Image (cartoon, rainbow, N blue to C red; front, top):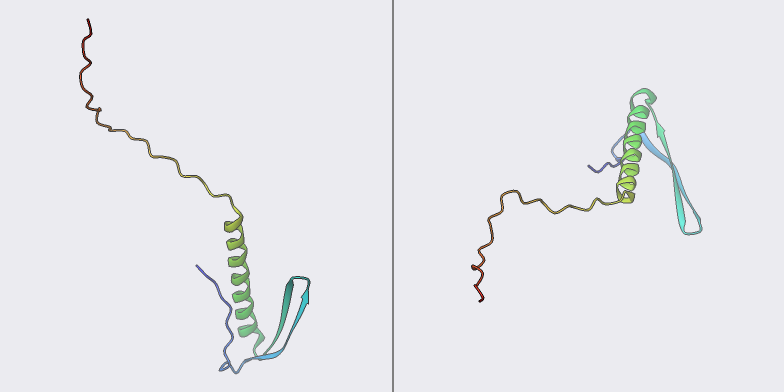
Length: 91
């Protein structure tokens, strides 16, 4: 299951206040500030969305870094005997 965080331009109770970006070496950071009218309703909702998003990312990283289990060959329990010719008698 993939998680995502969304913000709509039609949402009148949550507004994008500011955003910025910085780089350090080969990694970048984006900071986003939201202004929320109803903290009880909207703040808790957005924090819940972000928490789920972060948990899904951590799980995806954990799954990617875990060693893959090698599949074992299935054991044959009901195998028919091989049809080999009778041995030849040598005198």
